[in-house]
Image (tube, rainbow, N blue to C red; front, side):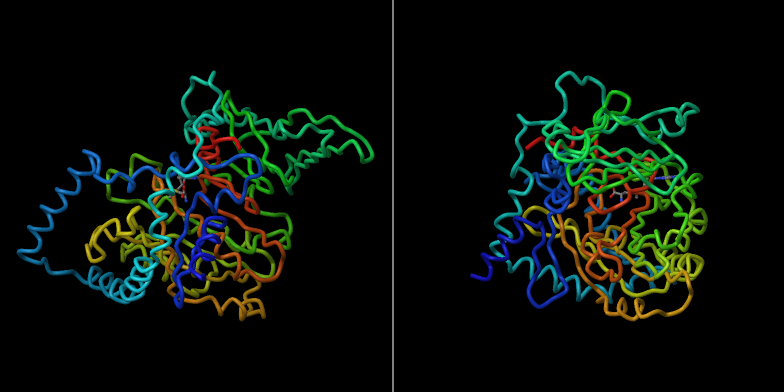
Length: 440
Ligand code: SAM
């Protein structure tokens, strides 16, 4: 039946399109796994919260605290100030779209039956790729990148062990940077066999690329990282982001996804990664990073009205980005229910992705006209991952990118790598640590 077919598509691709709507359910683990040939993202390390039938102690106390707060509030609803009213208006506009999407999810019984299994499925702890000898904990890349020795640290990439050079692995490191390393490694049938040993390159402030069709492994200060096929990364602080600007605009990017470390009043959030004041993002060189024919730009924002206004009135104009659409990420639990009440003012169970178009030439090209077809109000539903990871929605936006095939995609402030993408940020290989993977 149609439903069976959709489910089998979902189990392969991680994407389930809900009939007659702009709504999609996504399993980020499956989507990420399309980037790997020999490794798999371990679902149990991706997902952690929102699977337990009962919230953990910590969660429970937070929930009951919220309930208490809510009860207090319900007695006497506080008057909203002007900004809060504007935020409420945005919410009221989004509400019917979100409700409809969620309703459709709750009606997709075959899919719902599988949600609870997403965390355990395909997880083979015995094939964990972390070496049993490894006693060290995950690196703090943000800290390592800020010490004086940072420019001296090297990362060494080598093809995945299953593929010895004579089996036809070829790999190239290249980029448009000063620190270009260019090494070709041919298979036995081709012209020559060259040195296919580990290749070192600076870990910070340099583009490191795996342009092969196979995963590579990377050693960095005694820890192993998994580098997906056709991916590259540039790990640096915002101060060095100019190193990412291509020498020619025709090598620029067609799709740029940005998840800035917005300042947040919540102390809980503060512990996870360093944040920056909004004005720092004004200087992001989006126009210079964009392809000469233009780029689709997708920016994650919070539900704070002040921030939304900053993006509309200052940030997008400064970047040369014209607004196109808003998409939503609606967060659900493993039973399909929302992670929180839809109408709870300060704890919305959704986040927004504001989408625009950057045209470095400043003229509305044909390309721009095609992009205008991007639908407004698409809803992506998923079960949130640990460490407030965002689902890889960028992969879904690729279909709107026209022009270059395959599209050149860039993620700014990334913490993971994806096939077909360049990732930049001060800890952009964080979730590539082998502890998040198992070997197939
Ligand atoms: N989208 C990511 C994900 O789903 O995992 C989360 C990105 S998080 C909102 C922002 C990232 O920006 C963090 O990894 C943080 O370390 C990084 N960051 C903070 N300050 C930075 C700086 N000055 N330069 C570069 N990256 C920075």
